[in-house]
Amino acid sequence: MMKRALWISLGILLIAFVVIQFFQSPKNISTEVGVNDLFSQVVDKELEVKDILGHSCYDCHSNNTHYLWYSRIAPVSWMLASHIKEGKEDLNFSEWGLLSDREKISALQEMGDAVTKGEMPLKGYARLHKKARLSSDQKEQLLKWIDLESLRLLGQ
Image (tube, rainbow, N blue to C red; front, side):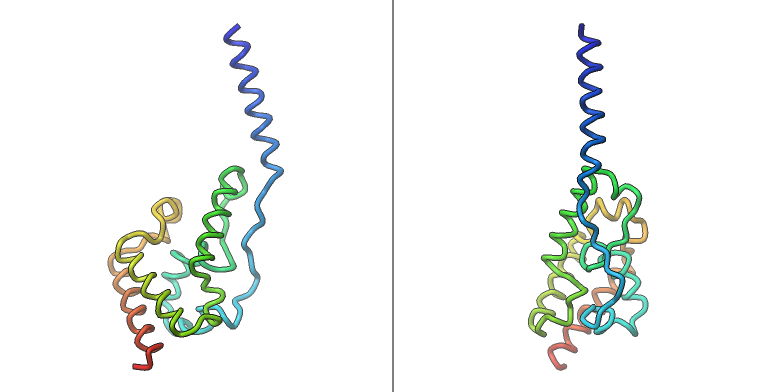
């Protein structure tokens, strides 16, 4: 009797798993880097910084996410969509040019704090994306760029 109940439960779980695959979150994919994008605004000459930001930040903080195979499997896809939505609400590099200088400086300071404290990129993201992991040299380079960009925005 217990075996039968177990098989029925497993069958129901399998059917539920298949059914939820039909409920996918919309993808965060843009085909262009617009004029308001951070890369168009300031980092086009800073190739190393652009590379760091591209690999470590842009998937969650821009309008263009590079999705890996597991992003098509619910409920993982739902969790990723939620992380991306929250990331873009906090800071969207695709809309950098729409921010005031004061908002940019504030965003840069928050970014620097998050990198210094090891809060960004998220540990789970960095575990799955080896290129997203920041070495101490990359952190130093990024923090130096943040300081220089903040000073530039302050007009110094």
